[in-house]
Length: 480
Image (cartoon, rainbow, N blue to C red; front, top):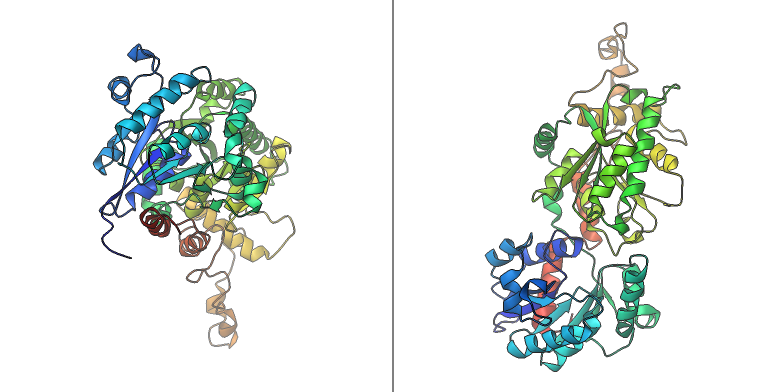
């Protein structure tokens, strides 16, 4: 890397600094950046009501703004936080005036402005460019919009971004997000660079000690835990998730055919991490469907990576996404994932992911979850192999191996019987049979499959340490 660049400051524009997907990904990148060379600042938004002004200054807004989740982390890393009045549709003139004043007061402070809030980036990026910021970037992180008037307004406000020249660079976390925000012409012309939502993979790698600790804290040490991570809003489709869970419970409670006998008597829990405007509504839904006592609404957690370890399965039925980092995190933790096919297929990186339509019946989703948990192969297969894998899964859930269905008190010790007969050599397992070698994969064995999974995710571009080097190169040079 060339020297003598000095420290470069990059301004990231966001709605806030809460625990959202974009915020988490940027903070992961920030922590792994060489901050002697590249430093981040943040421009966020909040309602101006408490200031008594329609177009208050950043200082006036910061004086009344409630600290957000990542504020302290930003300050600790050497970043600064500024604020604009929140755009509500009817305050266009006041919003523009606040932006113009802000960039006039902070001329020559940033080499790059990166707008992750694409709903209004066609407003603030041109103003930032006129103020003298050399590199203006729009970064698409969502492939859809909410329903109703809000969604229509978002699409309308993004329209200028589909024309070349509004920005210097266009980034998107996935092809779907690129087409949704920048349109077919710019995408097909190669004017949009795809930059996956990368994570610190090692932080999510399977850890038995963390798993046991969180499960004890949650009181689910001897339970099957289906997990989900996401803010409680329309896109995440929590109502569908809860109805799928209801079907899982009913299938287990009424398993007269003993199809899932291996799970008989085990408690089943739905663990949901996140906060949001629809959380109370979802609690009421769980109560009305009589599964509230089986649901854990855990809220936001600073150690969210540890909670993936406590899960046994991951369900993600979103209506739309840009590229959900939580599905990548779940894979890094070794979890089987059932994901909506409305989500970009770029998250389908490893053998752990199955994609299914949210137009399918909730019972179909529930059956798939239970089949995966019991490693039931609908197309048949090696029964002994499946039995061994199932024991591995149950060991992870219960903390002890269940007695094999192939063994009882009358089963002889074949190793002793075969001694000195020549048959003992035939019973030596082949090195690749039911054994997880380094960098190989076996469902049900999260620990020994971890390196294989992490390597696949890294090769697909989801490693934040590699991405930090790439982005530092861009920030310093203004090109890739």
